Image (cartoon, rainbow, N blue to C red; front, side, top):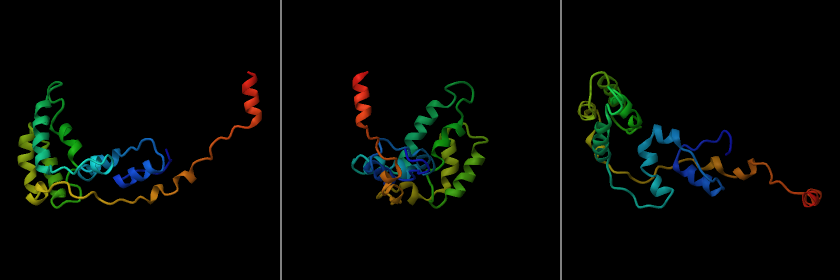
Length: 169
């Protein structure tokens, strides 16, 4: 791990892996911009073919999942807000995102199903955004990891005395 260097996109993930990272965490990027992060991870990092899923299709599947777990752990546990929170960034930087979030805040007060929540809030998002599929992967800055090996301490070199001592023990 290189302190102070964060991965905020998939290009930085591949750059870090190229420089020798064993694993890379992109939690904040995935949370704040899931469509452009998680929608491309299989293609960019693992080489899988592009998906033809649209946001509308993802939300339809999420609605089925979400409605099936509402109240599963007791009255109002989880509630609509709990289930929707992970997808609040789905329309990051898209037209209608701000209005959708304002409508979401209001809908959290009275909606008891994801179906009702989506019916009330998705009117803020244009059909062109809902029906677009994951396009080409977004570009990110990869310079963060250029020459990162120079930031690490040099490898430990064992001296002859240490080797002889270890053999004696």
